[in-house]
Image (cartoon, rainbow, N blue to C red; front, side, top):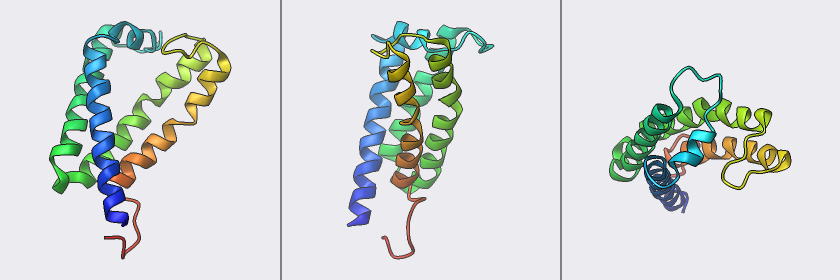
Length: 133
């Protein structure tokens, strides 16, 4: 049963990452640009495009390469950790984007980032007991 849940988690997160990555590259590009911190040393549009490509690639790999799920899960978890300072900056700087138009909403969002890390690690097979599979 754990194996099925892990597979569903992996596939769902992979599809979500691909969709979010495509959104970075197309319709929501401006919204994502608003989330790039002022202090980040790379052009905000280049940052959004680059992160979108990474998200599509990681999502596709999570779906299409089940034999590499541990590696991709770890990379996804690391990606979520790497972008977390941007989420903190959005809260600290009071940037409105994606309906996060109050400090409370931006603060609550911060608590979801660790859940994404756990989701990636679970889907990748990192969070398991010896008899889970």
